[in-house]
Amino acid sequence: MEFQPNRNITKKQPYRICFVCLGNICRSPTAEGIFQQKIKVCDLDSFFFIDSAGTSAYHVGEKANATSRRIAESHGVPLLSRARQFNSIDFYEFDLILAMDSSNYVNIMKLKSGITDSQVEMMRSFDPDGPNEDVPDPYYGGINGFENVFTILDRSSKELLKQLSPYIVKE
Ligand code: 4NP
Image (cartoon, protein in one colour):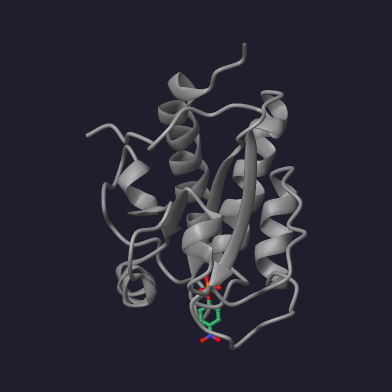
């Protein structure tokens, strides 16, 4: 099913997306970097505000994982973020919160209370090849896991931008 954002996207009201995983050093910074790159290439930077966060505080302040950075850079995507922990204020700061796996999703929803701006979805609900599966955690695996994560996130980000595009109002 196609995703429906809760409003149109304009330069005055950029669409705010936060990608969320556990540590905010592997999957979500990669998703953030990929999506940022895609909107830059399409000259849509000013229509979006993109960020990422982790449900845990394990790596707060750290750069993205060295292997994640190396793989992303080999695909022309710089990863520039520093890890931060997801918190309940984020529900008011973002229109769309995208969980990398079902555990992240459960932990995000535990923090959600009241009426907020945001919609919360699974990242792979945008994956044409693997709807609603987890983006596998590459942290304890080998190099192939990181490549696989990049490929999944690239595919899902492309579809995400495609589904949001009809709501971009350029005036
Ligand atoms: P991420 O990967 O959630 O994709 O950033 C992980 C990073 C660190 C840990 C787990 C997953 N950790 O347990 O420290």
